[in-house]
Image 1 (cartoon, rainbow, N blue to C red):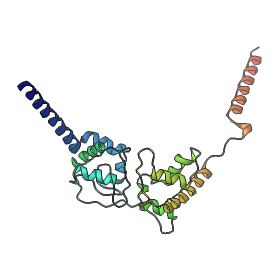
Image 2 (image 1 turned 45 degrees about the vertical axis):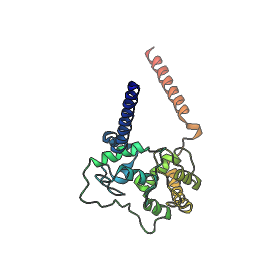
Image 3 (image 1 turned 30 degrees about the vertical axis):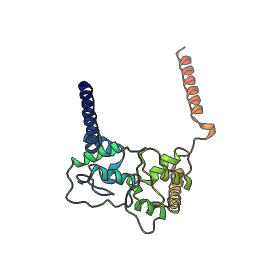
Image 4 (image 1 turned 180 degrees about the vertical axis):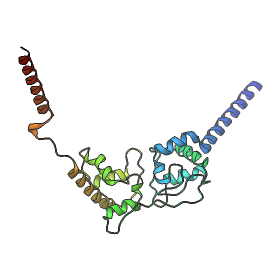
Length: 234
């Protein structure tokens, strides 16, 4: 009986120690992993390479708790888009938080401002206001690589889908942050960029002068040169 009680007591102690270690890991994080995750998840685009602030505020040495970071990522305030657990786990957020707490908070911070003009299209102004420019500072290049080069059409539906159910590392923008009407304005602006990119693309080779034809002509030229050489050596 005493052995049974001892076994149960030891088991309880071990389970308690395991629970405590897991809890500590979840609240302390791994700064080394966090440094890699900070870049991989593009947090640097808004908050700076070292959390010094950029389009959005300072995160280096902010003194907040890991739970505050997780809450902000899931249910953000202001213009910050949301990250669900499928995109970034609580553990990853905690690791990034731990990394940022190892860095010194800067003495001052001046937000980066994307230059726009009052006469710019509404969609461009919205991309600046909603901080889309943090990742897409060159809308023309973005549209070219994601739409024009892939033979995809820029549509309001495509923009809405990416905003609401984003692929890859892009966070989610709710309708409260970017309305359907605003998404349509952004799509209209991106369409103009797609048109410009398509117009700037080099014209296709004519059907009668494609690469195969050029190779054939080159081969004939070499053959002719070879025959002339043979005749000249006889």
